[in-house]
View: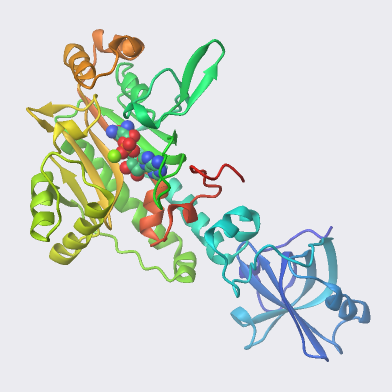
Amino acid sequence: MLKRTCYSDNIKDGEEVVLAGWVHERRDLGGIKFILLRDREGIAQITAPKKKVSEEIFKLMDSLGREWVITVKGNVKSSPQAPGGLEVIPTEIEVISMAEPSLPLDPSEKVDADIDTRLDNRYMDIRKPKVTAIFKIRSEILRAARDYLLSQSFVEIQTPKISASGTEGGTELFPLSYFEREAFLAQSPQLYKQTMMATGMDRVFEMAHYFRAEESNTRRHLSESDAVDIEMSFIENEDDVMHILENLVSYILKCVNENKKKELSLLGIEINVPPTPFRRVKYDEAISLLQEAGFNVHHGEDLGTESEKALGNIIKEKYGDDLYFLTKYPLSTKPFYTNFDGDVARAFDLDYKGIEISSGGQRIHNVEVLKTRIKEKGLPVSSFEAYLKPFRFGMPPHGGFGLGIDRLIMQMLNLENIREGVLFPHDRRRLEP
Ligand code: 4AD
Ligand code: MG
């Protein structure tokens, strides 16, 4: 096999190159034949004028099918009509792998496919340059997140994904048989990252994988999702945690803007990097804004999908903000580990264009208070013994958040459906691929 010398976006006039990729399209104008060769970085035009290439190559150009894998050796020439102003005149073409003629979907994006067809044939869907672009941006989001947190002296950790109990409320657990006992897939690293605060590690983060048995089929929930989770000690209140979160999100947006220009322009997206600090909207104010707009919402309830979306529009109109914190939630809407002042939780959500992308707050670090809250939530204290023990032997005040990556990319790129930003999304109906 010919060895690739460069990607299609890196060819230069006058060079001899070897490209490797898929046959995106073919055109035949009689005396001149074209192939568009697609690789990860773009599309290059392979041009074979009858008079300038060998008879063998001229013939081979005809036999190639769409989506065949080929390598092409050739000479780069400038050509104003070609994409990028350059074309490659082939001197050698190798067929590496053929494709059946009837394709499950059209990678050249001329024919639309519905989301189910796309996901059923995800390997081919991802060949589309716009879909590839989403996953290159996703990679940059994760790189930037790591970069930022490491710069703020966070230590990266990994915690178990098989756990003895739930953390975020009992209903969304995936049970599994763990030898002779019952166990669950981890909903969140919540309890482990709190335990880490008793180890003296002080500031930790995890590129975490969540498993949640979400019964309903929505455009923003998955059975498996990814998040950046952090936990930090010696905080005064939840504002210390919000400060890290807003700077993290702002840094991620800035990095994507600066380092993924080609992908953003392909997707037709302009990212607005908001100034920090982000707006804080108290829960009470959010309820009033919604009531004024005619929504039937009541104090004490968690915001539903519709009101969350409406609130996003109201805040955008009133203040021009895409990203804003919702603060001072009623304690009853938050999990047992949440710290509080009276019946107000020291917790927040971060919303992006009307969808929650993160939740966090200050945790309870007093073991007796924690036990009381577990009981008040109707949970069995006995199943939290391993979690509670570290709180008895020196636990600093601490807090953290979980930032959903799938939600973040969905809102950043205005994707219709969370599934578009996930390679192989799993949900109530979909387990394969
Ligand atoms: O709001 P959640 O449930 O908060 C926690 O897990 C806490 N332990 C975080 C903390 O440190 N206090 O989940 C955090 C984020 C959500 O805001 C959302 O972005 C994402 O994770 N998320 C999901 N994304 C897609 N599908 C699902 N089923 C999700 N569940 C949560
Ligand atoms: Mg939440």
